[in-house]
Image (tube, rainbow, N blue to C red):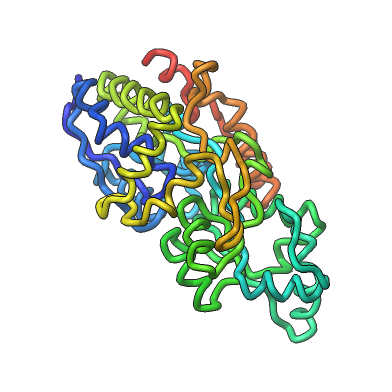
Length: 349
């Protein structure tokens, strides 16, 4: 059976590009699909709508299908992924006021990029004296953002308990930084670049500096939906895979940035969206960007399995969930990643 009309949920982020490109460049139509794109405000809302069938498919954070299968932070649901949509794409940004304070503490005029978390140690110690902490945010508990931020901290022997760590929707990150409610965050584009453009933040680390090439966004489906509509699933994989490959061209990426500026997508200026797509990381306002060629990765024309949801990626993510205390050893042992990360469906596209 083939379902020709479906709704696909996405979050307004730079790495929603494959979804937007597949729609705008006619790849969905080419594969016989009529797709309605549904912009969501938070990852939790997107997940719940997928679980309940309000949407048919979703752009999801790579750990989310695993979390859904375990019933973490919501109802237990058999979500699968047959396609990796993107890798990398996140950055760690601290407020300009905190950055300037750190410069004064270290008596320097600039920090080397990418900077290490040990730059925070003096401020963490000073705040502990008055029973306060730095406040950082990530977009969802079970996310590579969370694991990248905690990995960054652990490399400098800073425990997560030494900071306040909040869950904040991506679009709320910059206003929260500007208001002083946050001292920093780990988020995907374009929000790091927006903080820099508005001179409220400094982006010192990207996910490419930390957990290089770990899957970031995946296509999420309910297992029951895939079983009911196997041909639709194949068409959906093929359309999105073609969009990912289309995005390997730099000129095409600029066109994607132009599409993403539209109000129905990111509603953000092109000078905020384009940098990460073009392999650069904005660090300071009015400073030259840092070259990060793999900032956003959607495909690899020399590797046909780049977008395949290999089990070992899911296993690595599950291990990060275990190491961060998000799951216990019993939950880790019961996971059958091959039933969640479905390379078999990718191969039969």
